[in-house]
Image (tube, rainbow, N blue to C red):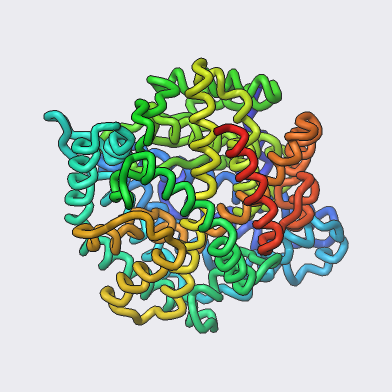
Length: 569
């Protein structure tokens, strides 16, 4: 598709950010501008939106480049400059502009739901703003990025070469148990070198976050963050219900899967290095060799579902908005980063040829399509999605593509294995989501806890949502620090349960597609095109599903997955 960067009407075409003064003049203009009519107010909103889009895209590129190469000090400096020199100075202006918007008599003339949702977010930002939190927010943003540098530097030696942890993890699928055990122990030994550093970093982040919350008048960071994240459509009690429902309806299914795994391996219990190996002794699934092949075949699949989907990825490739392969010094994980001005996002991942990489590519591709479908919405705020909506797009795409995976797996048995692995992974990830979320609730309800107390509580919660089928004897210290591998805890606190909620919605989208695929795709696109112009339940309804994480709904979806697995075995 032909992509043209929107013509700016407020900022100059050659606008760059080398110092704070480059930015400040435009905030001053917006703050001092007179608004004497509905039309003036609308123009003011559009100009503010343009400024937001440009600034967010500028920051995005600094983050993207830094995570691609964490060893480049200049890239780290560019990112840190924005975090320390620009963001803290933006905050007071953003607060005053929010006040100007909220107090405008013309605000009431914008009555449709999209504006009501936007204005609600503005009012929340006003409520949470505290001048004394500005330097704390800057410090927190800088510290949270230390995790990427620490984890990005982790690697192990294998066959005379240093390999990334992502590459090493693929070897845990190998049939040779001696190899798996060796790799597991090498990874554990390398991570152990950073345990104290990460414990200290996390404690510092907890302290900062708690201080920010109490400054804003909250008892704890959890309650502050719920408001900050705009969780208007559910409560912490709903999260607790989700935890309970997952424990009662999903964990028993996961336990059966693990017991079968142990039985097929001829063991009473699994060892920590046994969870990913194929119990029938088959080689790990290898759907592709290179990032280029991964992209080419994903585009083919997307084209078969809807030509627009494939066109989105091809356009990103043309613009250089993809970095897919794992390499030394690259941050772990994967993401799709929205770029609000041009409207074409960036996909970052660490592909090493595994089935998990295929899922990551499709997942982030779903996010990318979401960005394309709402790129023409009038205001940046309409495109700034709540995670519960954003993850619905990506997780639905994982499932909607399943019947097209033969482009990666021309062997029928491998295709069946891939589908079984996908569905079993969904079942396994839901208790992990509940574990991470329950851990975060405890962390921020008890901000003055000690590190030993944190380890003990993590181990307890792990057991609550665990199956008891894995024997961690002699590796207890490894188990008590497994939380340190979860990026979200360090960088985006409380952003994780959305995966669980969206996974339930995605399963329902997939279930609908089983009876009418074209209708499900049409509704999927309709929902994604809304951006954040409707409430979360309304967006889910547009997708043909409900925003529901009650025990009854989870039981129904669990039975659906179980039936699908039975048909594949």
